Image 1 (cartoon, rainbow, N blue to C red):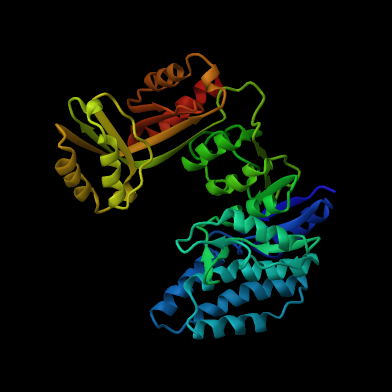
Image 2: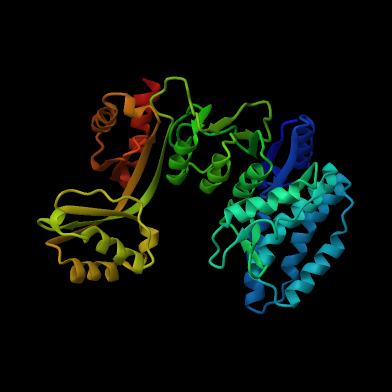
Length: 438
């Protein structure tokens, strides 16, 4: 029998009604054997996510403020779920242990991880599945980097002991110390992908509150078309540039094992969603999607005969690295080099970087431009289609959008366009109309 791994996000485990939907989905297919869950999300507008409450709890504890007033509503959320669903889990004992660990000066990561832990404890009991804690199965090195092969070995060995199980997402532990280590927000997607690989799954179903991915942001483009199929590489490009249906790093474990990812809607389980695979789309479409991010800073360095100066680019990158800043794009010319950096990365480091550029690189000129927006047009078939970049430029020109930067990756699955902040939404609509609405 094939094995399917499912991950349910915060909106899918937010309240008893949503968790009932999870059971219906799981029981509809006997191949759905391993379930990864997030902490409960918002039940309504203005509500709080459990993870946010736990982060607040950590801050309260760090400032030596009595934490019980904040612990009470957290416990109440889980108690409500357990009572309404008739789940037999001793939450009093669970919270007694958490309080004891807090009083013993546990780590902040431990506190935040309890959201997923308690969610998995309840849902495993509700489904009648085994509970498997990911703490000692998903392993990180001392710098918080995932040990992917060690993790796969540990997960595979443990899953072999359980025909069906529920696992908490979002956390594991440092391999050397055994202390809790967290993924970045949305990391339960990564947990699901790791479990899918370890279980040698036929598919990894990522259940959320949308019916897959759309070709553009619906807040910008009216009623954009859904993406039925997309490749891992295309998804990575779109996720990085703002298409946030799932955690961008969730692709890698599934891709390593050639496991398709199916993004599904818990509230509309009949919808097919989006399938992400090595193959991607096969419908002849030129582009798969459009995504973008705002607020970049472009640092442009000009120096005559730059191309003949051995190590120039390496020196420039070393300066940025030493400042603890990562870059997004590096368009180059014979005598010029530009670095496109998220403005949030620079903060108060810009002056330091510019001074180092002047001293170490001795450029003829340095220009800094802030408030640039970047748009990615992504599609595997673009390199086979003559005039794709011309169509992008033409659509923008017809709509009065000035292109500040244009860069096409050597992989030829994306074209990156830089525009002024005021033109961001207009540019996305123009490109979408050119390729999809025409």
